Length: 399
Image 1 (cartoon, rainbow, N blue to C red):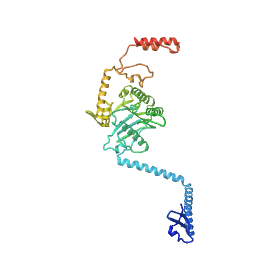
Image 2: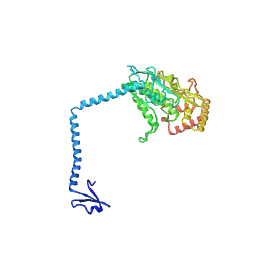
Image 3: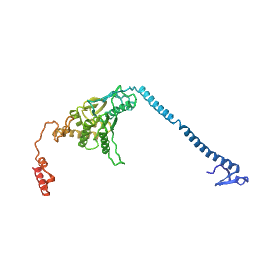
Image 4: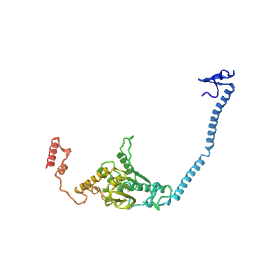
């Protein structure tokens, strides 16, 4: 702040030479400057300014001289970046046992002993799994317990496909990949507080984007769609989304769900296939095998997973009690409506509004209340006639 100076104590300051000029007075000292020191100070300060000016001048001259060689420099930088990426690909392929993928000009994703490139580095033993999607099987319906490996399996298929298209070797024993134009994912749960959107709204928005933009050459990952709302609403939405992917988008799709009602999907659509992540149940405990096998899962193992998470024993005991009660209640009730029979199959052209029970054979007698309601033409009724019709419906309901 005060540059260069000579500091003397109060006693010494009284004996300072005549050419000492007082610059600052402190409590116990005096600061002085001399003409020679002032000259030196000016040189130092000027040197700093001159250094900055010279640095700027040299930098601008360097940029100007590089203008003529800029295309060559950009080309060299691009080549260096490409070499860096290829060298990294080669090193990972050698160190981690990757293989070169094969490409086909027809729709197919055939992966043998595929692995997740990140997760396999974090666990002692990673269970490799196969994937087989082609024109005959376009949607894989994945079921199995939480923590069973459904999300990891879906991600590894997407990552192997992506790595193959970037020119990298892939973590698999063999991989045959057809044309893939885009990869869409609906995985995880998150809200958008700033945008005033709930978790379910975000989920539906992302799903809508996928259904509008996915093509026959796209890979779609859908993880537990519909879980953010009520059971019946979620089941109906999951069913409709799966139907749309099969009939309209016709994309390669991995569709993970806990709605076991959806496992009947392959019965109505030949291009859908059931697969599940296996697990073993020992008493009230569960062992995850992380191996994908044909067919739907037998159960969800939700309470067993909750036990692994450390849920209190009292809560687990209550959960078992409630589960037994719900299962007994479900067994005692009449057959549940089969929503798959209310949706058109891939060969049907016209939808018919019909309530069909799970066995597909049960028929109920006509309901007088529903018949009377169907005969009403509300646009043709006067206020008095509408009131009379309302009383008539109430009477039929009481009867």
